Amino acid sequence: MQFINGVTVGIVLFGIGILGLVLRRDLIIKLLSLGLVNESVILCLVSLNARPDGVPPIVYAEKGAPYVDPLPQALVLSAIVINFAILALALVFVMLLVERYHTTDSQRIEHEIQQEEHR
Amino acid sequence: MRNFPLGMAVFAVILVGCLCGVLIGGFGYRGAVDEAGAAYLLRAVEDTGAANMVSAIYLNYRLYDTLFELLVFSVAVLGVRFYLVGRNEEQVGSIPESQVVRTSADLLFPPILLLGIYLVLFGHLSPGGGFSGGVIAGTGLLLCAVALGAEVVARRFHEGILERLEWGVLLAVIILAIFPVAMGRVPLTDLLPTGRLGQLGSGGSILIYNGLIGIKVFIGTWVIIHYFMRHRGEI
Image (tube, rainbow over all chains, first blue to last red; front, side, top):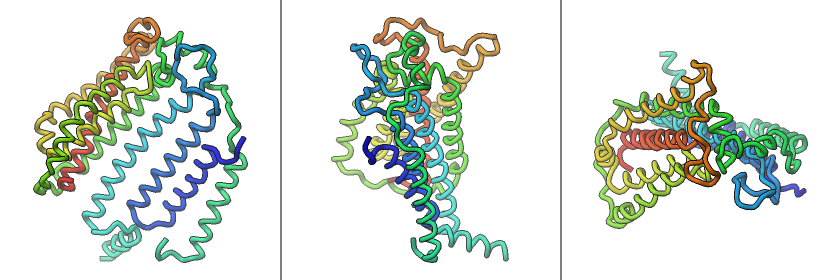
């Protein structure tokens, strides 16, 4: 069992995505990091039950082939679609914010909102 | 990491590094653990008649999972429309497209659409399914929109009818999945006979659901792309 496999790569990508979410101020880059987190979770789930000699869980002619587990793949489909939905909606909100404040910098947007409240 | 205190950034990096270390240490790859999926591998083909076991799981055993997934997708499409309709719709003149783009769009659109339809129809026999096929066909429309302009494509494909069709399809899926419960029967996963394995007619009602989901995702993808384009001007 080698150390570099889907699960470890997925966990490292998860860490990079979390760092991007926390440390970067640009809203678009935050969204990209959110997408990276989602993809890393998908990678983890799919490769957790994979086996090196496994074949896709589709019935071909030969019998007794070592199929990989179909359950995580079916569950991951929900994750992909919901990731798509979240990204589309979040991009709309970013578009509305940019239209109003003319920046994608989250700290400047917060600053301007505070100034508006003081006024 | 501009304009962040260096100490905070270092602290965050160390914290996330520790989290990743714990996860890798405790949650590592253990090889093939076929416990939950083993039952599906044993029974899926006899139960559903579909050769693709992933399709068999998400359109037969876990149909309600897929139904709510479809609802989430519809809510996203609805949200995009709700927040973008009527806002800042100044008509940006379309960029004059080059002959290369237009010709390659004409050449590529039919094969892309055909590939999408193939993936939808054969989703229970080979890799594919409603979601992937629908997204691929929607991307073909995106190619057309790049070549001809989004408004032209929307007019040509009668977008008003398409949007009504989208909600009709969603209603059909919900009725198909929920109505039998009220009658005290299993949700319609055994609507059609399962047929002989490997034929197009096998898989029972999986074909119906794949087709409905394919139409829904195709139209939803196009609506999202179109509203983004309309708001930002032409690409």
